Length: 424
Ligand code: GCU
Image 1: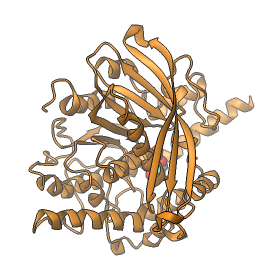
Image 2: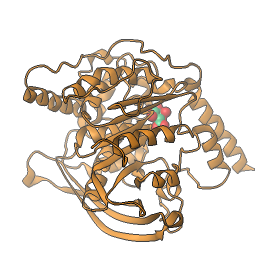
Image 3: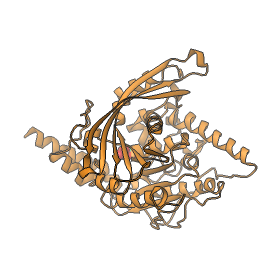
Image 4: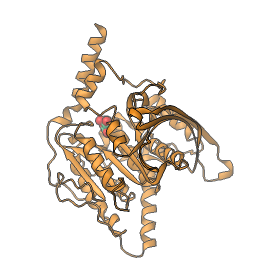
């Protein structure tokens, strides 16, 4: 009875959290202010590279906080859980990873801060290796994301269950693939998966999250610009990329970061700071992700800082209702991903994530792709999805979540850029 009451309450909460996302629809033509400052890549190539460095500094200083000055990753063990998962088409493994972060300008004084986590890896075996690999960070622990026998159960509480009424409600509200992606299709299309549960290292909670952020960044010394969860989760993508790099079964030119919503934010940040991530699928990343903070039509800085202050550097709060003073905006984050393929996923009724602001950011960032002789975005309207484009902008009807329409679009993009038939 009490459990039933809790579920009804959870549903009411979930729906009320989405109210702002369901009352209007994003317009399909770009509207609102163009991104400022306009990206101007003139002068020599080295001057332009200097601009990218300036963006990186401003983004860390004002929005996310600073990433470690040095990092290390080590694969402590690799356990084969099933040699013939999916009727012999894939091998399932669990890796134990140790990461190390050090902060401080003086390398001789740096203290190293360590943490460990599990990475669940699913590798297609019937295809010629090396294969491209999709790194995933998810809301649910890996045993829910890849619900196969043998995967360790995370000790951290997540609110996810692989079965039961609660998971049905979550799937109803947030889409069929919110917890578990279409594993069979992904494997059949020749992509490996490497899934981690970021809360295992940096919990998604004000109290425990902050404590972990603090411990892992001791040596940074400036509370105003200490990293928040988005930067820390982004850093974890890079560590996973580093761990995968040493395994010859994976294509070194095909490491893709996939994330939805808050992990769409961290996937963007990871690729912006790690040039060895080869592509990004950032779905409904919204504020602090692909959507511009200035002129945001959905979640403002004030709103995100009120609910999730620990996701960002303390300094970001200064720009709440003060967006004009921000020296950087999210199109500059996207620009740092050039010339690599980038998919930005959206939904028309998910106005909380401001699809229009993400589109204008993509328009403005395209000149960074131009610098490498590429085009960036190749669409005038939000709904003219071009999976082959350098920046593929995807929008579907509906609300926030990962639905049955989303993964086919993601796979089209992946095939176009990293599939067996993709251009070299
Ligand atoms: C909240 C938050 C968003 C975030 C989303 C999610 O709605 O306000 O910024 O993207 O959660 O991660 O699902």
